[in-house]
Image (cartoon, rainbow, N blue to C red; front, side):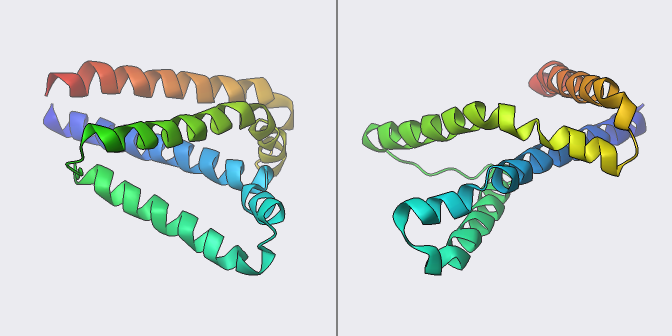
Length: 141
């Protein structure tokens, strides 16, 4: 029974990671976040630094999350961190409608042109199943 749980955990983890990774890449590429930032700040010559800062911060945050790393900070630092997190999540939520434009391109590339509803339902059911699995199984540990 533990082998089945381990395989299910690996499958759920990989599926969730792939879904989040695809969403993040779609967010960055489809919306052109980095080029827009360089346009707004008139710092186009530093675009490589923007790209590398995103890559390094994602890798560092993933590493810190997987190792349960935390900073012992006071309440004064929580307000700007919470504000920055809220701004990021707000931008991500506002951009979801544009990210959905990726799905027709994806369905054409993998040969599922007529099955876009099935692709959307698979994503929704997978996210719901993954969330339920995390809430119901990992909460009990």
